[in-house]
Length: 252
Image (cartoon, rainbow, N blue to C red; front, side, top):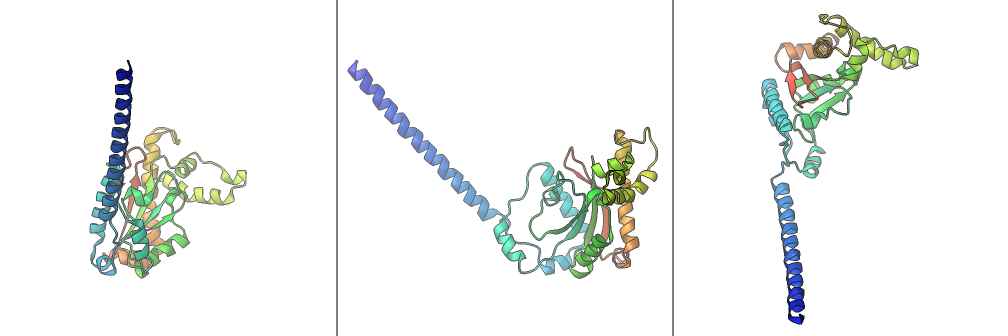
């Protein structure tokens, strides 16, 4: 009996030591993996020369590839500390994206981008206003970006309220009422297929598409400079829609 207890005690001690060693190995492997990831993480950002030589179509191609990474949950590892340090010296972004304020649309992640890669402007319903158009002029004519993207998204609350003709002003939300009035022309220009209601998904999605396309045209009307750059091919101004269900960005 004593021998059995002694053997059992030794077995417990041995098992404990073995478990500790395995835990140490796992911890070491985890640390080594983290070090390897940090060593292989992207540290660089776009340079002035790279920005000058890249074309709008090449940028669209890169953004589509980045979106594929996002959809497949294969985002690029980045050394944000190093990128932040480099970006502090100067910025040479590829593009400016006008997106909705919706918290479910993480613009940089959607395109698998890091610090210094793009300018982002956000407003409910991704409509243009004078300040945003001025920001686009700065991003392109001053800072050298080659692409302007107006990116709507499915399930857009602002568009839904515009479709349903929500009277925000009667609820003392004057500014929101003005914003919704900027979206309503996109509702009016959309072909009536079924009920004119945000519950009509097909109609709502068509309005979302038309709203992004209309904003592109409105930007050109508001800014002769941006229209000039677009006309001569220096930049492109394009519309796109982010699909909330799939994570995919569809360029229109």
